[in-house]
Length: 237
Ligand SMILES: [Zn+2]
Image 1 (spheres, rainbow, N blue to C red):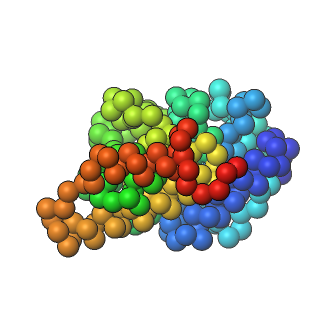
Image 2 (cartoon, helix red, strand yellow):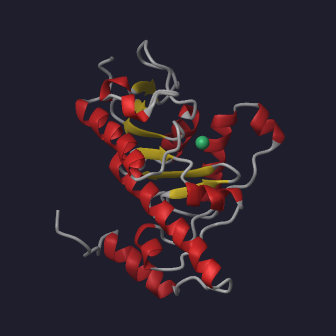
Image 3 (cartoon, rainbow, N blue to C red):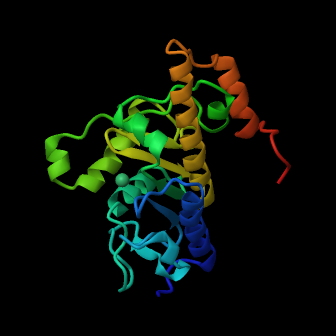
């Protein structure tokens, strides 16, 4: 147990870790969720190798977002910690990150194919095709592998000119999905939406290998009605 990170952030990160399990996105102990406290200069992340069923909010590990150092003795942070830190460092608007090996999204990552926006379910969450990274080089794999994984996600978004909150998911080639959002709960929601969208895309192509993405107008309309200045989906907050 350590006192780093507000109780609210600790609860939110814990809830995001539980949400991906409840949604069936976790096999064994694969995957992790984190959340960041920008003012406190720290992130809270799942400890490495701990079964989700045993995970308590106080088990989450606090890591300095500048140095990557663990802020208190105790459980070791997820081995994917450098990947999360790279994303928080590159995208100040990101407040929570989720990584899973969920079956359908990981299948697209293994096929090294971006997920086309075949319908409005996709457009409600992801403003365009969900991109896939290039393969890491042998040197990147042999070196600081987890940091290189973060860097290649950042490279994928920036070279495509994508906004991190408009495209809150990237498939890491031959690995699996990372999703994020302004907070840990939204990052988990995006992981759940991505898995559904990935499964439906596979089924769409099975029914019709020539299926085409939705029109840009429909993509924009569905994205904008849930996000941005003119959003009108749901209730006023
Ligand atoms: Zn992984």
